[in-house]
Image 1 (cartoon, one colour):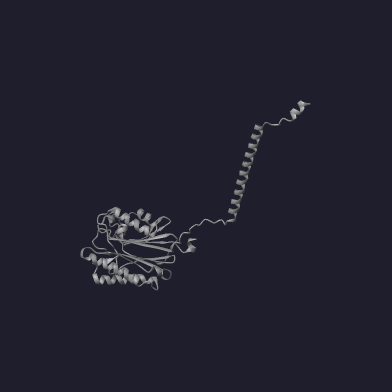
Image 2 (cartoon, rainbow, N blue to C red):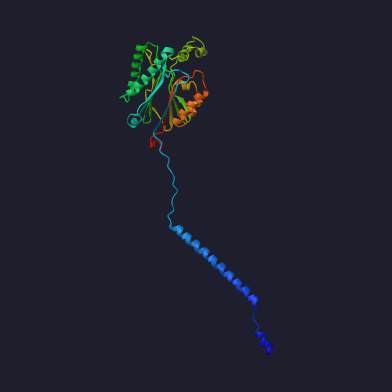
Length: 313
């Protein structure tokens, strides 16, 4: 009996075991509390984030392009006199009247050099001065009269070329005399819109009659001489009988032969693919890099037609 009572009075677990279990229980309780706290905080943050309005990312819309982009370039080259001239009508009247761009390359050497520059400047200024006109068909008559007046004053010892382009909405009209060029770039293809009026063309026609071999037409020292120019007694003007329709992103370039005789067509095409101002910058960079001896005066007017908003869309 005493042995039974003694066994009953013994503790179930030693003190050390109880202390270990108490420590384990306390650690488990602390870990559980930390886990609960973590989930409560996370839930609160999610709720707060959900209450806030989600801001959409801000995207800047590019400025809409103008219907018509314009820039110009002019340099004296290696010459002592600037014989090129250009004129442009008021851009703020484009919506009402269209835009007229005029480029002239004066003719004359020695004492007549200054005369050529004066004739070019006056021709460009006068043509822009009478714009807008009532009817495009009046322009060839004005060119004829202008040439006759210059002839009466200088008797063939001074003159100028002319290339004039009128853009009205999506229509292009042009008038040309001499060897200044008008180029169109469309879908990365380059087109010459006007024909150079040079003596070479007359020589080529004579070869068709068997007067001499065609090779001699290109070798003739007068092949590059102008067959038509303002200052000739009886001048022929090359012009559009009907307006030429432009497409969005068409680029135009009016230039004197100081540009087109120095650069290749590839260089001109690559420059015209750029914006109008970048085109002019590129043309001048290429002209200066060419370092052509006796570089002529060079002038250009670059235009890019982006089209009306509804056309572009």
